[in-house]
Image 1: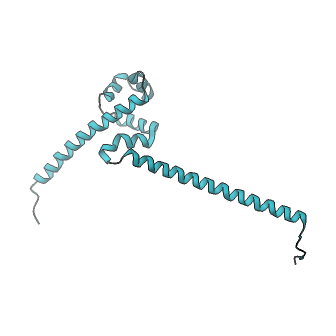
Image 2: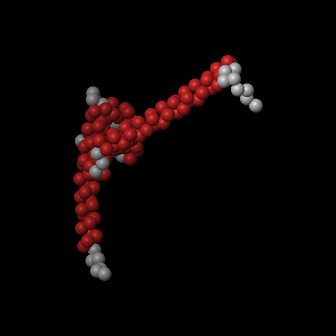
Length: 146
């Protein structure tokens, strides 16, 4: 087994740092884009109000700087999984299309379960109504039950 001289680890760390720097720029740009879409008029002022920070802080985000963790968590709480999928797409390799299809699948599955429950309830109600009608008319078959 070859002994690692440290050069491989150093190269890996350098490429990881470069990759992280590149992804930070991508993510920052996506956050800026998202903010401009959500706060189209006076973005810095309105986003600052929404996230409890100064407009100058938001101007930094709009320039591509990453928000502090507390602000990022507030954004995630406000906008959910779609926001997370959008901003981290370059780093994770997941696309919004895949997320949207997955989301639609789960919504359809929940809707199907709700419809199945409604169908079962309606069937039970019809069975009860039929039983009440049959008892009300008596047994018309001519056979006496024992």
